[in-house]
Image (cartoon, rainbow over all chains, first blue to last red; front, side, top):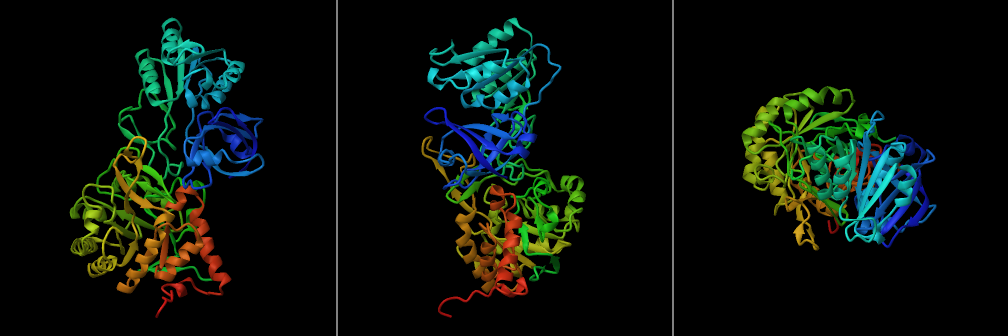
Length: 250
Length: 304
């Protein structure tokens, strides 16, 4: 699908916020799904980038960090230029409208982006925990506040919000509140700890995994992870899995 | 419109384009992007007699105009394939090629026997670089190639393609060994053994350290090998290695390929197979060539 870049913002030295016009994809997109983007330049493979938000039913917003030649080339695109995108791909987060207790959305670093659309879809019921390295790395806090019940920020160095990890904040919340469900996306060690803490309290937990990916549609079976004793494809069976079933060291 | 139909060892393909084994799964995923009946044949992901889990991730690394993979022949086994995939695949008007893998000669015979004549052709995978036993170990010795080819041929109920590894000194010798063993068709090239190192961690990116290189980066090597094999044997050749466009496919056919497989290009663009097929047709029409078979092996070498 060829999509026009309609909005572009640089959020920090290395973080870019793009919006593309793609009514067909926007109509189908669900939180936690991703786009597979041809970045041009010397990058041969597409890059999987999670959907951050769906806007006005016709645009998709995605935010990415420049990490290598693919994303660095993608960052060079200008408003009005066209991008070759496959999507929306994968199985995203499953929302349970019947959840009555707290719904925790826990993101770390650039893992927070797919949680924004999820927070919106939780219709004001989400309690959002966002973890960053420091104050300068904090992103989208006000946007999350606008659509969530509560937003807690934690930074590794205490320069903004709670001094420590989101897992500490989660511990405090789950100790004194009933929690219906947890959704998480971020660094693997963070998600593993959250999934283990959730399992110990019998709270359902959905985790969004990442792996080096090829086709993005499930055919090449390169992005496998171990789930419930079997190989699952992050791109097609995931990226969102049940936290209790993921074998973190598989 | 030029004739696109080709006859590969008695099997009629409606056009000369198939899929590179391992890049196309069993077709389900890409059937959401195009009609599989548009292809001359679908070459399926490798099947073994018993299920294989494959290697741990990361299984893929990007390189310059290509990829390294170390999937390791993950598959549900030939019986599960017959049960869950075959009848669905047969709803499409295309030929089916099963790619056979194993760790021992007996394994290859077993999978050929399980599949019987449920598919249209077999492709003997003696060239996968990502497994400890079998795979490329069979495909880098002429003596082993002849032996395994003749043993599988003896039980095969459908025409047998032998897929050659490029990780050899003399590809023509390997092709002659396959032909001597009774191969009906030769396909080449499988991937070139490679390695990519992450200079930050000072470790290879692939969990398996080394993997198979594919994509446009390998194309000139593949074209050269197809040419050399064409000079060495008289059986049909399915050429592959980095084919991304119709022009690429034409190069392989001029070098001597009777048909072509597109693989890695499809990992980047799900419409690559159709684009290649259309591109071949356009080249023929643009050049007033009435039949795709007429260009096979017609490269004019310099100095001859």
